[in-house]
Length: 127
Image (tube, rainbow, N blue to C red):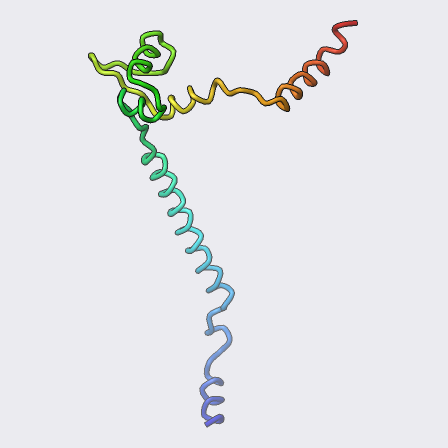
């Protein structure tokens, strides 16, 4: 049986055999191309699937745990970001989140760091 296999192998030339490294390389290139296509598709999906969440006065009131009259007062004073469509008020959730975070109270550590930065920047100006 071994002799028969050797006879078959004698007829096959090394040039007739496919280079395994070329085969692996071509498959890797195809995989890379597919991965790039998947990545581009997923990026497009992420960009198109991030719609802004629109909220009404009632949902903002619940979200911020404030009364309706407080929300109306903030909108009439133009203190809270909002949109008006006819008689209705709308709010963008991202904008509300930013608005809530912009009045952050600094900790003592934050205040000390800012004071040290100010002193360091302005130490030569007082001379």
